[in-house]
Image 1 (cartoon, rainbow, N blue to C red):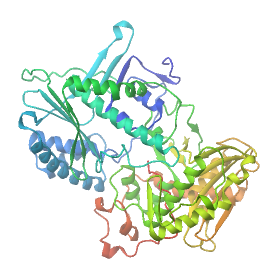
Image 2 (cartoon, helix red, strand yellow):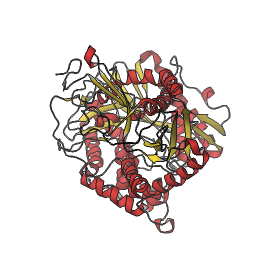
Image 3 (tube, rainbow, N blue to C red):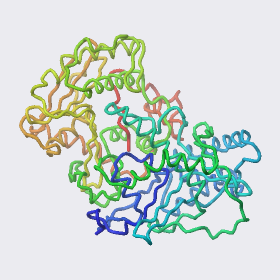
Length: 589
């Protein structure tokens, strides 16, 4: 066993940090484990590999290499990149290849514009195959080997005096926004600060590794240190200029975020990067989430609760993936849509106006319930300008804004803080994560509100509705997060008193509200909940192809631009009616 790492083995005197670490979640143990490349589970997991490729950016980079290094035409370059991926047992989805081709074209056009904006003497036009690795070896004195590198496309001037690294993004890079485009209602400011700090650290680390790094090929094994390149190069003088460029592949724009001499890169690293790097290699309080599927601590983490069988699937050797009620709904609409969401490909018109209204209501309530004290919501707490208001990152106007304000008023009598004296712990939009070891799936859920009432946990989901539910609606099938909540409460994930635990569905209408209670202690209701979750998860779990399912959903599909099988709008028929229901916006991991 490795000291300080129960359940793990391997050396811990080798540390490696790359720029991608700044965007890989907030769990300190996940980042620290990844930063120790020789660390591995003491008992190796025997699981199958996924057949579909899950990193289209790698295929795009391979295609660009063929174009810029060997002069291959774009179509041939993409074909060669696909062949290379197939040799590694990975098959890209046809829709992902549509994105790759579009991204290649945008990148090359943007690169030409960027080159024209840079002074000829300062241009970095020679593609560099090796990584630039800044390292410090203290093992002789009982310390550690530190390696820092940047993941991106690397270029240098013909004489090697100018180095430039370009960091690629799937969509549009907006320098005014923090890294990532999704925020949670709870702790939004701290989340945004974390993302801003992460991007500043990423850029500082990229500048530092370019300024002081030694050229080195990717190691044959991840656990091995980088070794200096053996490729002979013409003698180069000192590095006089370093440039870091953020590139959005949706428009190809190249944004220069750092340019300066090595001394400036060092100051930038010391100010914005060094602290983040130290934190990235230091263990802390584990924060289970969607990243658990990629974490090598998964089988050794005490914070990740094993709950075998909650999906009703037995296949422990399956590739580990992440599932939520939201990803189950996406899959039921179209397997390809769920897969492309998981790949984080750019989405277009993701939210209808009614869905934006629902998100704004959720964000408003999240801020109200997560604030200091436990003041009950009242009619006085609705937006002062009902036809134009914002909550979190959501801004609504007009009719939907007025509806949302009325729904917030309808919540007033349903606010649990009217019973504040009976409440214990309260959690606003907490992320709950468990490992169904029987199916080898990381299951996540994010209830709108969890609160402890007289010692029993209450799981509340809030839905905004323009019209009443249809008579006879199967609530568990209509809102599968309710079914998942019932199962997790029945499995005693949160502990607390079994008697009194319940799932609440709060329905907010413009002129009224309703509360429906679901009892996880009721065997018939619980059996139906398990049936719903199994029926939603089982087809997804068995699918290895994510074949599109063209139909009416194509009309409003946010990723239709990438799907070669999407029906033309004229043939798709009317889109499903979404006016009555707000999407919860959970991310498909």
